[in-house]
Image (cartoon, one colour):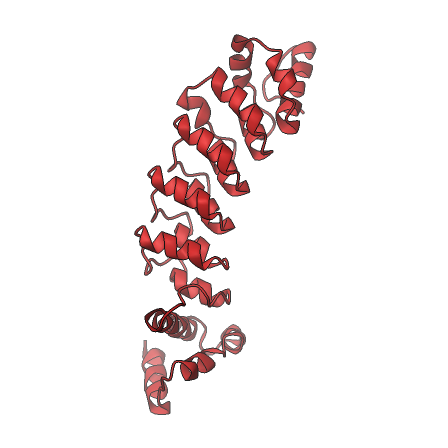
Length: 267
């Protein structure tokens, strides 16, 4: 593994050994270093601008992480970013390692740092369906309505999974259910498109919300794809909307649909 700054060959080999130890969880190699040497090792970066802490975290090596953060407790180390803007907390949240998440937070990890894609650690916890980590991040001040570069909130990400309890948690904690991304889609629209109809279900009121999400999708599809082959394919893929209408005991007359479509065509 190449280090991104010039070092003598012996030190270069040692640096590679340190990265390897962090990756494999070889804490004995790190324990052989003095506290000063271990602290200095934080300045090392690999070809992806990742530190040994980044590598240990993304590899799920909690014992190594404990050693490293004990050697240097400064938040500048904990919150350092790689070339993609990822902090160690991003990685810990993404892989679902709650122990490491808690370790980093206890040392002052910033829960709201965005990576190059505009995503926080909460975006990744939500997108992977990690309930406990999502709870933990929120309790430490994570911005629940933070949008990434494509306008998605953590709820958008969670809604695309099959984790209805996670979506309910986010909503209970204040997530905006009507937040729209750059494509104009709300989290519920995303859930329906991904066929995760259990998100939001549970009682008649929630069923009505899901029904509204289906209709929002239908409106969005017509407005964006009318007279387009893509529209036809997408409508066919979500044709079960009509089944849902029937299940809810609702009805919409042909004239209502006809008048609504005519109004869309005039827009």
